[in-house]
Length: 388
Image (tube, rainbow, N blue to C red; front, top):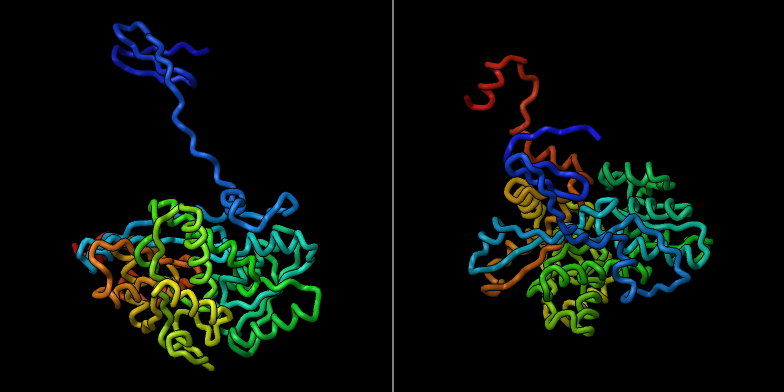
């Protein structure tokens, strides 16, 4: 061992002891080890008692879940009246969206059933999650997407994970119609949210919200596309309430883009249009379930414009430091739109479904005035641009 010389009053750490030098005489002090946080091994491991799994289920996981519930004080300040606002940032899941929660269950159960291939229709996030989990399980993955309406980040994920990507000349609703027929006719397992195991996995987000807050929030604000996630959250809150893990249930406040708002309008939107491509769905597969959730929770469905979505999207990034994809920001846009209706002192959770890196093109279009290009490479020029 090397000889170490220190001055009086200095400290020296070793692997097991802290040596305090007093008058040049080392006095060993044994430290107790700090508590070690239990390792996270994914949703099925954490919440298996609440999920339809058994010892025969081959768990396929990327250690999804355990995403942060982040306070957003700047947004809360816009509402005032001692309202607390948090965002459940599921964009920090392994493939960057909440879809991983459902896919760990859907793929695990597909593998348990002996499936060799899975199929899904997608606006982007489902395709990425299905591809990642299917390939991890050793299964083939096929995804149908609407040509020209999938953000590049999501398309890149599906391709690199190894899925066969089939882009059709039609919208998501047509793609879903086709994959449902394919699953009925050919040996492929459907892993869209009509698959009940998807919702079983996604309900765990509600468990995490309650585990973090100590109770259910007063409002749960959530974007709606195919309406599976609002259904899953309600399942989770109700199940936790039945087990006395919380003593109340939230009002479920669902938000759709104004150009793609069938649940708000009460009719199918044949040609949905919105910048929030993840919720560009005109005929949600979970329509009736979502309506049942709204009624049971005494909640409400509302539409937000693309302008309102983009304003919330930029606000989350520039004032809270949270970069989500545009569709995610619909929850915050909706909350701000209904600010006067929020009860004083309420606790509100807004669900952010996907990471902003899924759709970098939209981000770059928003702040072009702060992107200074073709600048002369001199100190003086750079200082001028900076305002000095």
